[in-house]
Image (cartoon, rainbow, N blue to C red; front, side, top):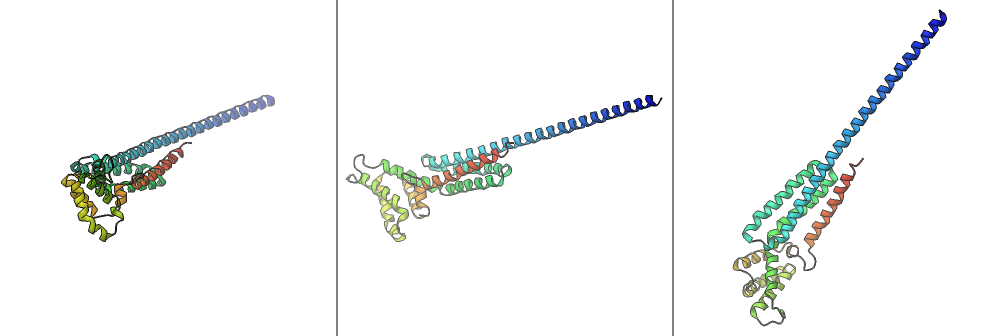
Length: 248
């Protein structure tokens, strides 16, 4: 009997240990399953966030690129349609920036704000810039096809002189500009390159020379657009970095 009881005791003890081991294995498996599910859920959330951010960044870049391209094309657009179309493109930038503000981390939002600030600067100057650049192009087209500086045709000569006035207008002293304003008006009219309304618009712009060189742009470089490109490139770099940080 003692041997039988002892055997039964060890059999029960072994069974209990096996049951405990099974419970532990099951618990470990459950915990592993939960952990895997949590990781999968987290990966799903991160992937969803990355997709949302990527979409917001792309929409913002698209909006600002469309806006800047429109500003560069504004001189070729009829004057009556310029302001309304400009407002539409500028509003699209503001709306797209809101998406970055909601989803982007602070460093990306700061760069987006810098891009938006440059767009605002372009918007402020866009209409007068279009007037001046359109006038400059029209005057260049009215030059003498042979030698603009020595041409004796009064219309060709006036177009060249008016062009030179506009090119240097922002660097003249205030008194000198007032002295030459009538001559500028005369040469613009005498060039026959601009309509009366265009001449009036150029003279209105000539009375406010703030940011003049930025408005007419350089003949090789365009400082205003160069600054925009710099902040845009910085935004792209930071935006890509914020997406890379989501990769496990």
